[in-house]
Image 1 (cartoon, one colour):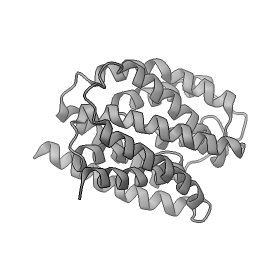
Image 2 (cartoon, helix red, strand yellow; image 1 turned 120 degrees about the vertical axis):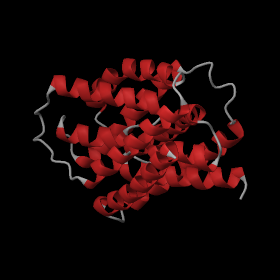
Image 3 (cartoon, one colour; image 1 turned 135 degrees about the vertical axis):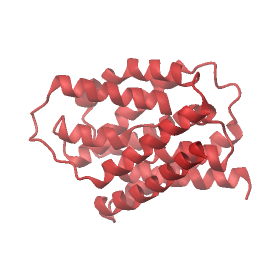
Image 4 (cartoon, helix red, strand yellow; image 1 turned 90 degrees about the vertical axis):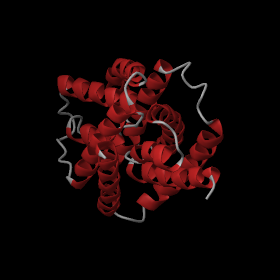
Length: 247
């Protein structure tokens, strides 16, 4: 199977998950770029940021049309993550492949566990500024460091910390992901000269189309079912990556 075909298939899966769950799909982008398409961990995280930024912005537009984005809340949450995303993005390129892979495997496992746990929402209006700022900063750091959008962390944080309803949290998380990804990409400007754009382009295009389909899929299948299925895939990916580092 050619690299182009693999890029299109992987991109479609990433977009499908991102559109359906409001996050989590980007966690698959890095392992796909490394193990299916042969990129180094450093190049894969940079490429994933490009893919995540474009796909999240597209999905954000779709959710905006339906009024599912809390712009003021999302902007404040995202603002807390801009500096950490920028700094983490600058540091990531200097770390060894083994460290990046192990860190990514740990985050993928965390994403899977988080998806299997139900989120308890607080009553709307009980916003804790300090906790919200801390969650936003942590999300920004994860985005910049590992090239993932962090929606699997953003959605539960927006529900439990800021009291948003689930549908609104999904839409708002896409705003946060887009802003953080752009900040991380800015930190890596100049490091993209060697990126394989012949792979990134088709991957991104397929992910964008997949995000639209994912949004429609979410309306037909329960969120709980989707999350459990995706969590199983993430656990398998995390285990494979950890074994790869150790062996």
